[in-house]
Length: 118
Image (cartoon, rainbow, N blue to C red; front, side, top):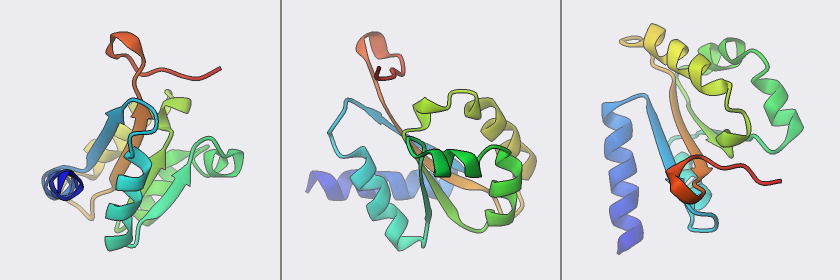
């Protein structure tokens, strides 16, 4: 039942806005939830711990704009913190068009800040 409520909440958020972040501690199901939602939207999944997937976003505009009609899942987005400012700019520029849509997941360390593993 909790999964359905959270799933519905993510779907509703995607209907309202271009980007949704799934943030929480490790191993609570953020990626699983993102993939469940993604299956319903024929999403593109990028695992930013994977160097080949990170390379696809070396120029985020070149990857995201041609895929503006697709939901893009950016897993482990906290691994590429410089991506946030670029995503905001692309999403803001694209508002009202075939919007770039994204779900990202990151885990939160103590104090509520996005954390990275060593």
